[in-house]
Length: 254
Image (cartoon, rainbow, N blue to C red; front, side, top):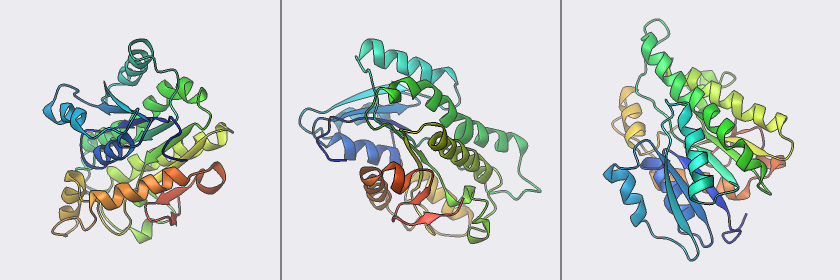
């Protein structure tokens, strides 16, 4: 992909952290439409997205998508079509997620487990089903799930952290994204991990780092965003499809 292909991106969790960084990066390009999906469009954090630098011919659209609300993606797509004239989306990045518990299997609160599955697992499914018709209208439909090696079964011994709520919820995301690849011949669908052996320097990343005994996250948002952008820009069905791609270009086992 180049920076002048008149691409339309939809990014969830766009108001902060990696989502905001991705929004800022793509919006700075020319002839680009960035749809920033946020939980509360009226919040100061969401409103501040309108102040991000915009490339020539580019524009930002802010819509409401709360991953816990199944109807939100459908409503957002209706709004995009009927109020903003959006008839296709080229690249969807399912970035929104939560990670606020590092319990073992024997002690994870069931309500916490359920919430992680709802947001990190069901949320991307709601999103994909809603945007699917718009992706079908794209010349290069791409669906990217922001995942994690903590959701890997084959590589579990490489990430021995107690993450009984977060890990399985990301495993659901991984399965969905990989299945999209096999069910849709023309799609580019893959999982992007924002950091291996390190936690991204975000609110969620720093909180996760502290829970496993680290003072703070080692990796900056800029590093994570830069790596993910590079993956997306260079992705083809053959090179990236159905893979768990790490931000640095390596591949992690499912």
